[in-house]
Amino acid sequence: MVKLTRLSGTEFVLNAEMVQEIESTPDTIVTLTSGKKVMVKESVEDVIQAVLEYKRSVLNPTFEPNQETE
Image 1: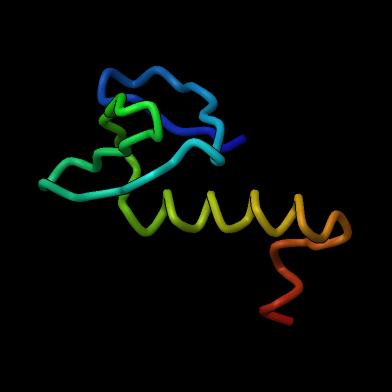
Image 2: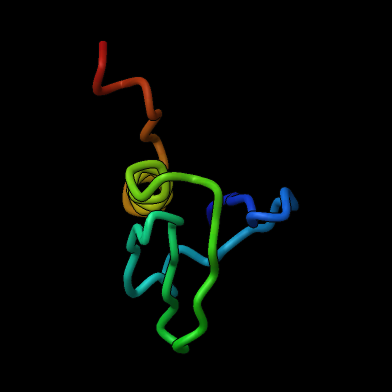
């Protein structure tokens, strides 16, 4: 699950496994496997990073995001 922010400013949690596509138009639009589209404040890069961190935590529960930079 990743925490994102709608354009209205409200935060919500998205199931990262449901992300099909992320695009910038210039607003960031996350398209889910259901076809639903959600516009968020975060940049495409920020959404990708959040999804990658989520997936790493699922595949490697001992992973800590700052491990790679040390």
